[in-house]
Amino acid sequence: MAEIFAYIKHADGVADDSALELFVAAKKIAADATVTAVVTGSGADMDKICTEMAAVYNAVWKIDNAALAYPNAEVVRKALVNTLPADSIVLLPHDTFGMDLGPGLSIKMDSSFAADIVGIEGTDGGALKVIRQEFSGQVSTHVTCDIAAGAVLNIRPGVFQYDDSKAGGDVADKSGDAGDLSVKRTFLEVVEAEAGDVDITKSEVLVSVGRGIEDEDNVEIVFDLAEAMGADVSCSRPIVDAKWMEKSRQVGTSGQTVKPKVYMAMGISGSFQHMGGIKGNPFIVAVNKNTKAPIFQVADVGIEADILEFIPELQEAIEGL
Amino acid sequence: MEILVCVKRVPDTSENEIEINSDGNDIERDDLVYSVNEWDNYAVEEAIQIVDKVGGSVTVVTVGDDESEEVLRREMAMGANNGLLLTDDAFEGSDGKGIATILKGAVEKGNYDLIMTGAQADEGAAQVGGMLAAMMDYPYASLVNLIEAGDGKLKVGREIEGGNQEMNEIELPCVLSIQTGINEPRYVGIRGIRKVASVEIPELGAGDLGVDAAAIGEDAAKVKRVDYFMPDMGEGAEMLEGSTEEIIAKLIEYLKAKGGLK
Ligand SMILES: Cc1cc2nc3c(=O)[nH]c(=O)nc-3n(C[C@H](O)[C@H](O)[C@H](O)COP(=O)(O)OP(=O)(O)OC[C@H]3O[C@@H](n4cnc5c(N)ncnc54)[C@H](O)[C@@H]3O)c2cc1C
Ligand SMILES: Nc1ncnc2c1ncn2[C@@H]1O[C@H](COP(=O)(O)O)[C@@H](O)[C@H]1O
Image (tube, rainbow over all chains, first blue to last red):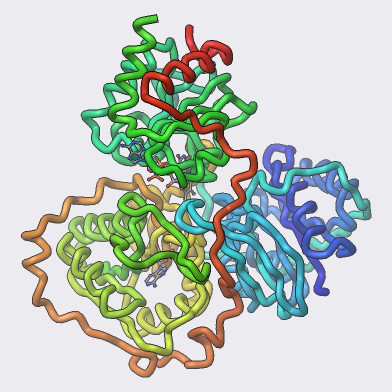
């Protein structure tokens, strides 16, 4: 079995949740695998992250270089291609960074690529069997990935929960192997999201609406229901893309992270990018006209209904209490 | 600026409930409504807007079969100048790397400054753009939600976690994958489609593109789908049944118990 490497995402001296999830995923590929954490970056935070990872991973490779101070995927790719053995299995989180890095890395390492892995069933000869989803989670698939010449595997965040398992190892400084890191894409700055008129991250009850609302004119009924309930209104991404609501109301990985007590998902299919923004294990009510919508797998209570009819009826009943 | 936009014909998830066929080896494809991948529409709109500002032309390209021509025509009705249909039996069964290899053939036959893809398509892989860029040795930026054209380079915003935006400068030629919300794709009416109905769309196969047959198709695919299955529902939601009044009464009980009503 080729060596397994996990790329450790970190910012401001704090490792991303994916950092330890990738260790769990790696052990699913082979329980006895030697798994090395790769930490790239620059400056004072590096040693802290490396020490934390050395407590869990079999080994840590540290690549310290001023060009890696911000994780520009193009620069990181060069550092990894120059440092890692050619037939490595490289694990990345399937997030905005992993999507930026993974596909191109697999080409440059001449290895296979599998995206957004949600399950790992183990290896059979040179092939790894994994589980993926298609059509925003409506169906699942088993996929075989030829890993004989190495692979880049993007792992869905939050799936392989860290379980306190540990190997433990040493930190090796590989900074000298990073080589030429010049690229044709330069990082400039991060522009922070603008605050909106409501702060849904503080809301205890959210009535959240998705593409099932169908038309801008219908958005009103959601606000009316929320008012009757004493709740705030949030939404899924397509509602913001269509400019029917402000970005500050979007729940999900590229929007807000909310921690309400009750979350009412109205006409939302339940994609992982949406669900990734819901924390604190709220009571989830899903109303959807498709009983196979993935949201019903994670909701506490489900209702098969047309939200355009159901929302006004629920509002009326609540007002009549 | 000469812009190539890669588009894919996919089953429209807002129009279909996706079901698995009885053999479990495919989804039920009868009666499926297809459309252009949501993300690709934003990419084409962005390309048209750039060309409106700085001049040039927009070419849309797809790897598919005869039926894929309809998505090219749709994007040409939006305002793309040219269409290219890459089709060949040898392409069948290609994995993401195979599709990127075929598209590379089309890129090399043109003289494009900018290549755009959608951020992801129906399989949720988000892979073709990044692979194509690496094969061409072009710089790449994914999940782009802002583009400002400059001289020999672009300023691009990438959407990152939490609604934040990562600003980058990227040299041309480059490949960008486009995130939804970057613009508001224009509406295409029947009239628009009719206007481009008779425009010739060239078809190119493996030979025309000069792609090595050993690098594409099912035999070259290192990543293969084995089957489709319904995800394990786990505990799943408790489905409320009965008349609407009964359902609402039960729901209100739950909401009261869980602190959902003020
Ligand atoms: C990098 C990246 C980041 C992303 N970040 C986010 C994010 O932060 N937040 C987010 O939400 N998404 C995000 N997305 C998009 C995400 O993948 C999904 O596309 C999106 O969440 C789908 O929104 P939806 O559930 O409203 O729409 P759909 O998936 O289209 O679902 C609509 C649902 O409504 C149901 N429906 C339709 N009509 C009715 C009706 N009349 N009554 C009842 N039900 C009805 C349908 O059955 C369907 O289940 C991101 C995607 C990418 C690639
Ligand atoms: N068959 C195809 N033909 C043309 N472009 C494609 C094809 N498949 C994928 N793409 C492009 O690659 C993007 C990402 O798709 P994927 O990597 O499959 O998630 C899509 O939005 C398209 O722009």
